[in-house]
Length: 240
Image (cartoon, rainbow, N blue to C red):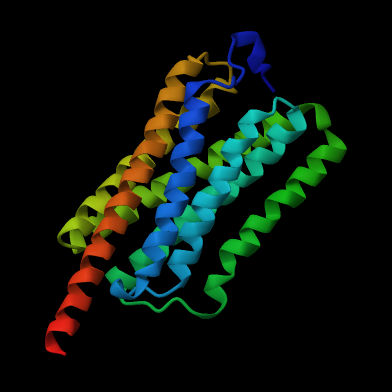
């Protein structure tokens, strides 16, 4: 593995870390607010669960920036991997429901959890067999997971955007933008482990924009669902 510190690529606690933490935890609050109006959007509870977990685990991942301990850094990547799995799952399930009329029930709901549990096992194995490269190895795994997840999300968000109307188009458009940025961010992170020098400030900007577009998508969704809820309750009140 490449020693990133020799290229000046070590992570530092700066403005982007603060912004990222604020954005992801605000996004989680928006998910909770939107969930309260979930009955307006008939997608069931499963996608909401995975959406909550995706933002929650990425928020924990960002809190890991506050420690420079390599062990904490390696654990932080597990939460990043979980976030990628659950974010991809949420959009994929919404795609199945809205574009294919599928019901999300049975074993399929537990597949993402089973997949997520593999990575703590990998971490434990690496911790025992090669602790010196634990952080870099988990970082590479996180990069690959986000790259795969982002490619899936780009497709599902595009398909959802072409099948919906109104502000839902904006929601999925910003999810797609966020996925493109996540793909770029993690691709740059992956190639630098192969010896290509990439400015850390560039990755900071891309990561911050990734979080920004994610929070915008959740803000639009929350605002839209609250507006529809008020209109719906207003209609009922007028009828009564």
